[in-house]
Length: 149
Image (cartoon, rainbow, N blue to C red):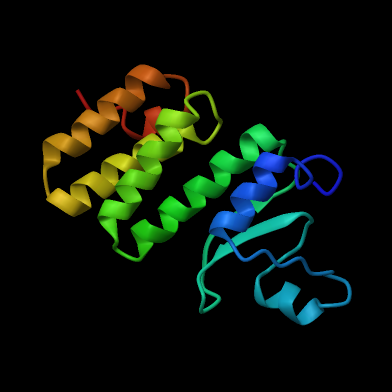
């Protein structure tokens, strides 16, 4: 990651705009590594200011996959914090901007959940999941909603 992904200007700008990056050496900081169950590097954690984990990535990702994953992590943090409007906007942004990203089907799934949680409109949920089935039919996320007509 240090040779390819982090030096990428778009990645660096995104991280600096939305995160407070912290890099630790898991061998010399075993207490932190243990606390966050880091067993492989790189491990990227999306944490809030209290140190609560909301999303995790393990292993190398190229820049074009890394940013969508980080955006997804922010969306999941908003969803778990019950900030459904922010979650919907963030997750929809992932799907709209990174349509072919590996995280897009999962973002579409959770976008539907965030829309439902915000509005309690079942049709919004089902529409999001129908779009998931149509746009990403071979994904595991489409299988999760295969019961939707």
